[in-house]
Length: 85
Image (cartoon, rainbow, N blue to C red; front, side, top):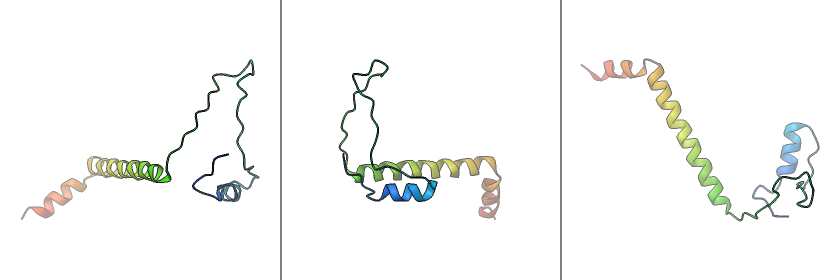
């Protein structure tokens, strides 16, 4: 089992959901006749890469919210009136 970056995730998730969370994952047996393709590649990425992706997507979300507020409200007109004498 691979160690996760957030070492105490089971307890935190259990507290949030109010249910027991077991410290393992369930995988489909490749020999099962009802299984789809069960090739589980081992991904070894550093936590910094995950944090970088999170920052990237939150920044994009913030920019899209800013553009949405700018286009869907009259903030642009108010700021244009303040800038003109």
